[in-house]
Length: 222
Image 1: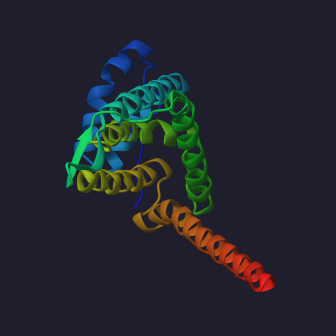
Image 2: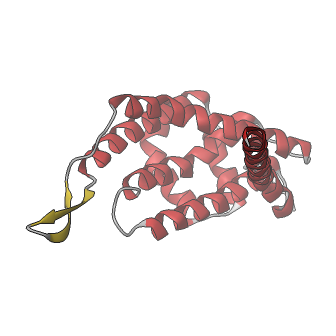
Image 3: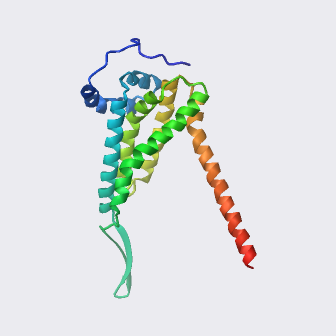
């Protein structure tokens, strides 16, 4: 099944201020209407200027929110009070500002790297879309879900919600690749899950290699 672009092959180019003002509505549409056709419609507003603004905003907010969220995250403390074991918490957390500063750069760079792998695999499977459009439509759900995950990551008892958001993000990514690259569900899923499978295989091979090396060294020392 293919997904045709909008009926107007050359829609009028809107002012960047208009696109930025409309981003919250675009976020809401793709989050509440997960379908390839939704991403095809939104792709007509794709531009590198809007992409860079979103990436910069995402990186800065991720770093700032992550920094303050970790400051407010309580650390469980265990100690003895008059011979009685007590469990409590204190609202202090060792936070390195360099970590938050790193997120400002690593979040956008990591996202662009992952998008590059998906783009190459999608084209290898017959995809027709551009890298720029793929990045643009993927940001429409990655930004709100990513920021939500940053905040929820330090809220107690929200692990299941964070996991559900991650799964939903994968579902939306499949729909986005289907719409942008005119691929069916199977090919789009393969383009997204193949890197995950390869990373798992590489991690297992690396762990086995390290374990074998350690056992070899221990054998020599006996």
